[in-house]
Length: 309
Ligand SMILES: Nc1nc2c(ncn2[C@@H]2O[C@H](COP(=O)(O)OP(=O)(O)OP(=O)(O)O)[C@@H](O)[C@H]2O)c(=O)[nH]1
Ligand SMILES: [Mg+2]
View 1 (cartoon, rainbow, N blue to C red):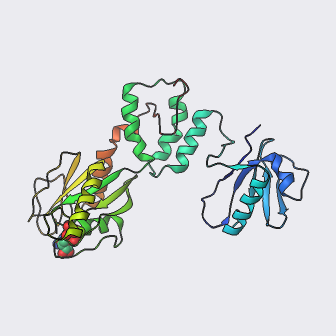
View 2: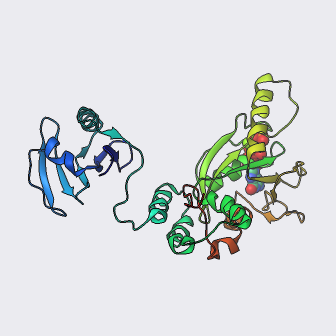
View 3: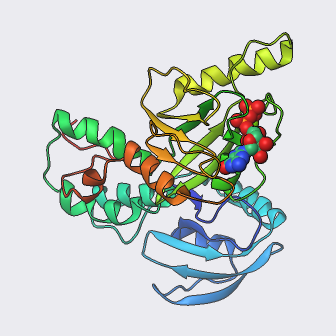
């Protein structure tokens, strides 16, 4: 018997239609219909709440598809509570054969990076009967960035073009750009897709000594974000040198339309768009090496716990 739970399968926002998974035994209690054939869709009334499309998927589980307005969802939640059903965030995947496939589909539903898709789909075969080695732990820690976006920061002296680069990478005015140093006060973050790897990119204020206590406070906060980052993108233009960094970093020279630096990993121009795609690829490869993406070794992805543990 399934636990007496219900799950909202669609996002918890307003939508045209919501999809809810619940025990089949609840169907006759919440609708005007008593006879249900497995696999057949019905349009049913949920008295005083809504009309819904409903299907008994198996003897244990059913799906109902009411309208997705917040008031309808609230009323349904109250009705389910009256029946003793508890809401859970974790759906039961009815199509899965085993625990690996169920964990894989859960990971797939929350994975942010497009590159996660094929790799996750191949894991049930890769993980079948696999035991975990030390190398598997370190590879999983890296590949899990495909599910949970890692933090990446832009770090460089004031006025080197960090915010302009941020805006070019996010393709919108995420950050304020100005020709006077000190334009960016607070760290600004945005989620971007770097050639298939989704990262949370932060534009930080340029670190400098300042008598402005608010700016100093913002710089202290920005240093904490920089310390947490999985990758630091050091930024310099022809007029400023690189910041010191003890963390994993890429050296990116900006304003290549004005002057090229020969000591950078990538030279870009946010104004002309030169090498922005190359930068996206360099960020991706620095965080998740290409050979890991092509490997058919097992990925003990986050959310999957092998039974031997
Ligand atoms: N020619 C040229 N100028 C650029 C480029 N990128 C930025 N700039 C200019 O450089 C100046 C500073 O740019 P910002 O993006 O505000 O620099 P920042 O590093 O964010 O500065 P702070 O927020 O003060 O730390 C602005 O006048 C930009 O127009 C570029 O690719 N080419
Ligand atoms: Mg800035």
